Length: 298
Image (tube, rainbow, N blue to C red; front, side, top):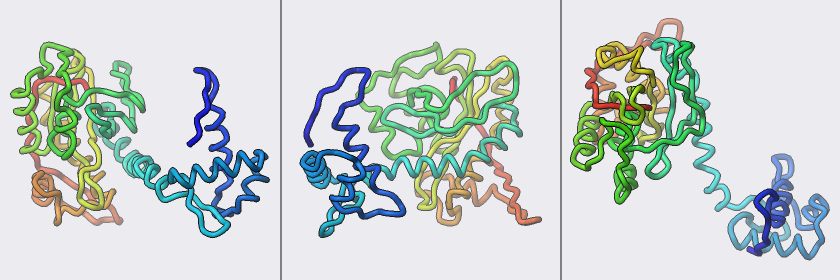
């Protein structure tokens, strides 16, 4: 595609033009002709034709006769974001319920390479709190959510290969042996709890979330200041997190009967979940023992 230079404060002119062309495709008119695109954008005919041809070549658009539509490649690029929005929309009420039940901030994370990103938050109502915000990025080797990614996300461990295991606190795992031991514990238990790994005064408890294809989708958990929550509270908070993660997975279409191979999560769900269909609701109780790991900040 043709390149045009820009400044740090102004968008590239070619991107402005591409955005104008893409804006011509709507639900009401998904297949405009080139002449319609030229009229809608107000671009010179030669410029518009050149850009449209380049966009077809790069997969932004597809052509059928004299009409164009959004390209399959562009749809593929957009799919991860759409899935993320679906997860956030589905899980948000569960995060809020977990926050209300535990009193602590509840977060949903997705992975990007060797990092995890907060995509949804239900903040605690306590005055003393550790702030979390959507878009917050953290490493996956430190903290309970990261251990869950490494244990259940097939691509997480390889994404961390070659990365430096930065030691944020005295309890941050900085050796592969230690990290792999924690991963094994998270995998065998189906959850992880940690205290003071990324920030010395913050802890977290996390569990995996699966989707309709019984594949790993995200991590759900609670984060808290250590002045209010200690390892002794894991027995109280752990089952709540496990229950919420299962609730989120079921909401995403996960099937406990089918399960996620090799995770042990389905077995926990099948053994620990009791359904109560009164008034169309289901009360799920996960009877899962929890292990307090060695440190975390969510």
